[in-house]
Length: 179
Image (tube, helix red, strand yellow):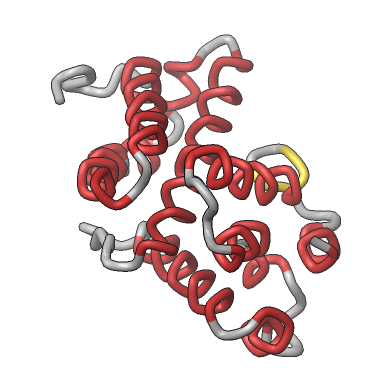
């Protein structure tokens, strides 16, 4: 937790301290997954470290030294997924249980935060209208949820499904509710 505090200090994610986002992702995993591997929880707490920590020394080497090979491997996979969202037709990878758990939790937290921020403006539709790239990712998020469903606890899949349904309704996404 000390590393998460240090690297998150002074940074924000979704208009809140970055550490709040990291802790929420870890809590979502712990809430839905019975006895998740400790490496998944640590990776959840540190998953934004490559974006937040200083460039030197190499963050992945620091993570490997401090936590073993599994934590930086999970974080690298999450970072690759985040980068892929900037590309057309991002791939959906569900072959790695640890990464799928962390990725699903990250989506739940991020989308919940976006919904909160949209509602706080008093003009949720306008909020989402200003974010066409994000709204364009809704089919990807929905496809991810369907593919990840058998790989994550049922309650976690249902949680992501419910958040996506709220997102679709709030953004008045075409086809909302037609799953």
